[in-house]
Each structure stands twice: as C-alpha cells, then as structure tokens.
Image (cartoon, rainbow, N blue to C red; front, side, top):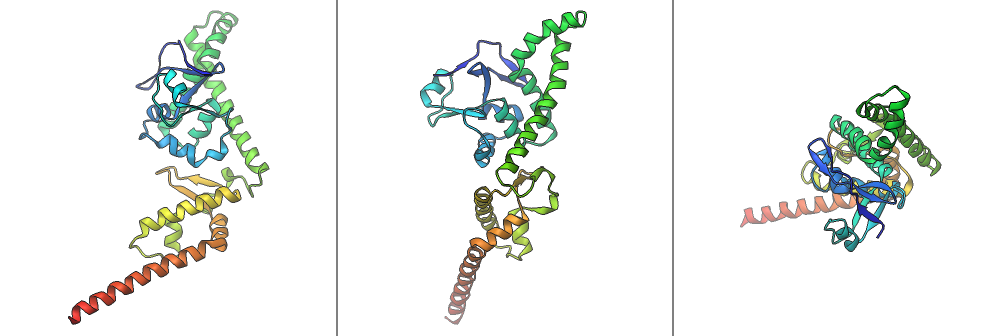
Length: 269
C-alpha cells in the first residue's frame, strides 16, 4: 500500500477539519474532502471528475486505491478510493468558479498541499529578511507562488488541448459560441412538454460527441450547466443527431395522435 494518513496535525480550511493523506511524499485529497471544503453537495466533485476524466493523468493527477487500502487510511470505500494530487485538484477546481471556490482553492493549496514546503522555507526566509515571523513568510509564499503555479497549470492544459487537435483554445472562445442543450432545443422550437427529458438526453449525447471528436465543453458559472460549442452541435446533427431528434419527434407526435384518437372514441361512446 503506497498511501498513508499523515501524522501531521489536522488542517482547518474554513470550518472543515482535514487530516492530511500522503502518497509518495506528496499530499492528496479525496473527492469527498473537496465537496466538504467547497461546501458542495456530496457527489459534486465525483461528477465533475467523471465528466472530465480524459483530462486527468493517472499517477500524476490522481491515483485509485482499493477498498483494503482505503480502509488502512481510515476511509470506507467499497468501490475503491480516488485520491487527487495538487495538480489534479487544480484541474478539478476549474469547474468550481464562484467567489467562495477561489478563496478555498487558495487556502487549500497554501495550507494543505504546500504546508511542508512552506514550513521548510520559512526559517531561511526569516533569517534572510531579518527575523520576519513564520506566519508572514507563509502568507507571502502562498500569495506569490500559488497564482504563478495556477497560471502555469492553465497554460499547460491549453497547450495539451491544442496539441491533441482541438480546433481552437476553448478559453478564448466567446461565450456566445457556446449553447446549453436547453438553449439548442429552444432554438429549433422543441415543444415544452417533455422538454426536460430531452435536455438530459441531448446533453448526454453531445457530451459523448464532444469527447470523441475533441470539441471543448464549458460549464456555466451560475449553475454548472454544460455548454457545447456551436460547431460541436452542428457536427453532431450531421452525424446522427438529426435522425435522433426526428425519431424522438415522431414518437412524440405518434403518442399525441394516439391520445387524440382515444379521446375521440371515448367521446363518441
């Protein structure tokens, strides 16, 4: 077993107490820990991780422990335990974009992931600056290094996406080029009745299509709704999407005619 619960003191982020977990001398977090410190419903981080699974590198951004290894960490996980490194957490945190998320991300990186490095650097920095206190040095290191690391991480992700054949960088695409499944259905005049089920069905198919063909997917800042690039929607329509929508419309209209015929027969009776 290559992971262990750290002997270090419990770290408090906001109102949440975290007991550090370490693997290969670096700290890791569970998906449940992310939900707790960000104040999100249980399962939110797991859904975001699963939706973007292809962007994470196993062994670098995350590792998976079996049930027995998780139990050795004091965690019950019958189906296995996913642990994220600092780089994995920063990738996942991109989809948690409210003001609270930014503050939590800064604190978690500074006081959880990099606590060891900060503590080692503090005595030397204090001597060089004439006895600056440890707390001041810790804060200075966190404030200056975390934004640089986040910027480098974002740049690396963009370059990787471009090298894998993405048509353009999703970060610089204007928001008007992206639509939710609901907006798309509204644009083609899909009926209101039963639209919620169609939104779920179309969103799932567009997600798979985007992943298969390298199209970017964004999350809306307000409700974390998946947004799809217009080119992805057009390509999906040309490659089976129109047929799917036509079949759904035919079933809907057929059911409508059936209900009408039934009501007419009952009226004549």
